[in-house]
Length: 298
Image (tube, rainbow, N blue to C red; front, side):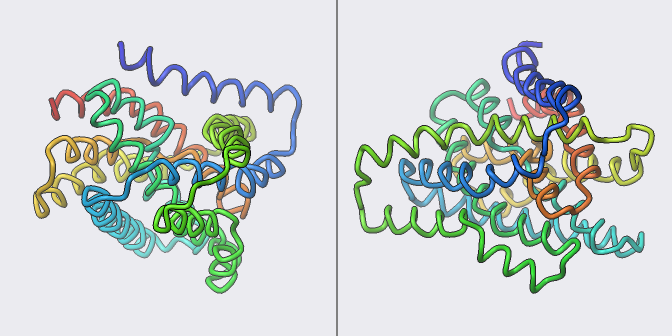
């Protein structure tokens, strides 16, 4: 109950705020998602990378995250192949299952459960997952309706792609960003997480609840909340690492679908209702599954 009150409830309240606003005012969701993708997300990437130390543990996170991502994508592809789903549905399911909410959900839970040391790992993992989502997430979102070539072009054109490269160069060359410029970054970056949560709530307001695709949603819940942490345990068993980091990685792998993927789905019109509904259902179910995972991890 404490985890729900301190961590999950604030997230749900932001969803509800976006839901209520959209039901009341009927705003242009795509315009907001464009602002989030082209302005706020690049600022968050630069802000976080600028203050993150790249060390051996970060390399372990990279290897772990890449393996987990590729395995989850493969599972989705196999499932969609046997169910004979089209490219758009496959891309929507990959968006909703391969990327977890490690930022505005996972990081606070890590802080509550394991303290400041683990929270440092969680923040680094947030940065890494943001990078992966800005490459693979956008690729699959654009690929859903527009094909592979267009998807690759979309990745290249995304400002967040260049924000990652700029941030890495700043770290490697130890460049100090002027305080006045960093102040602007610090103002915009933190807005990203609550903004994407509001957009998710707004998108949920557009869903026709009588047409929820329960078969796809159920499979996505199984992959995201059960298979993902099980695969994470297997990966860590094969590549031993710091016990605290291992707990963070397993717990993060059990998080619900990432809210950012809703932005990608809305932006490129890749099954936005399906992605949004999976994000909602996995978030609600995670109230129970994350509590159980915390008990099992100790």
